[in-house]
Length: 246
Image (cartoon, rainbow, N blue to C red; front, side, top):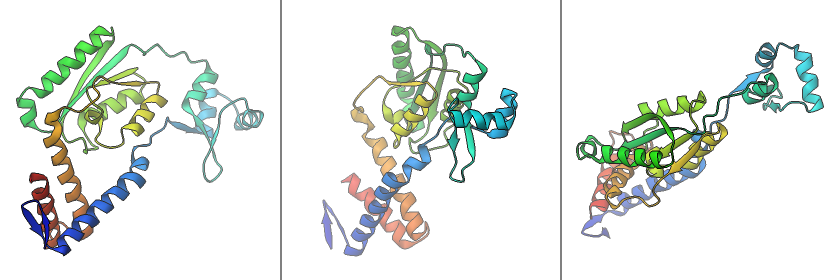
């Protein structure tokens, strides 16, 4: 038996936990970037020509002459960034640099009932007022930072995609996402949107949320490795719960 604090685990269970954590680490470093990297809309040659009112041969000629920015796909096809088409059309977009969205999140309804969500929003609103931002929306989610399909987060991404805002204000980086913050930040930057994080360190009371996220991650990967109904899955998840409770 392998001792872990006041709990003891069999070598097989310990190796199972190690396997899950290794799988989790590999996923985070190798696959997460592909999940979070998002870029601006790319138009096909015909779509771009239709907007510009030109013949495809004209666009091809401009490409060869370096008069416009064109991206090539793996198959060699032309894709034109929407911003490049708008530049050629002389589109002048309104200044959105002072329009801000407040985004707040707690992981459970218990935190919401304790007033954590309201305090978070109030702090963000005060920050925006001090910097004289025009707050166009206050968005909130009650969900884990690992949840990729949060209702208000999706609304935020839609607003960024439509060019309706210039600033996103959050309390801590993990309010936006538990992993992959830099990839979301890169996406926002590609749409001329800044992300302002008003606090540096996570609060001490964030420990419980971190524990819940860890257990959720281990449960997910253990389920993929062994099946959610397997005995090994139950032992690994229970073993991790015991370890973090120690």
